[in-house]
Image 1 (cartoon, one colour):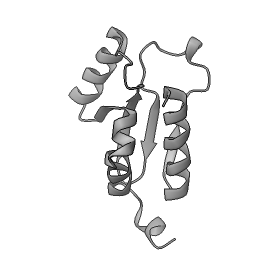
Image 2: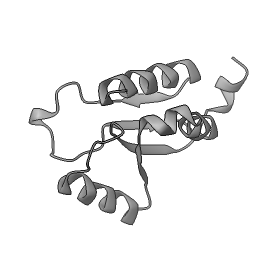
Image 3: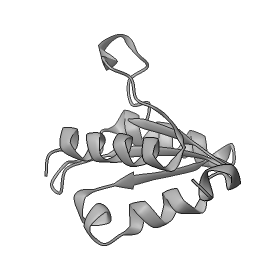
Length: 102
C-alpha cells in the first residue's frame, strides 16, 4: 500500500465516522515536515502517514517533537496500522458522541 492509498483510506474513514480531516493538497508551499493529516473529533490527532518502508525526514521528526511538547497527539501511521485495526481504534476513540448513533 502506498502512502497516497493509505491517505485516501484514512480520509474516507474519517468522513464516514463524522471526524474532521485536513490534508494539505499540495505541500510544496507549506511548512516542511508538517504532519500529513490533522484529524479532529473529541480530540485532535496529528498523523504522519508513511508506506511500510517510508522513512521520516528530520523536519517531520521536529514537528512531531514540537506537537508532543505542546501536549498534542502525534504519531506515524503505516499500512500495518490499517491492517491490524490500530488506525480504526484511534479514530473511534475520538468519534463525536453525536456521530456514534449515526
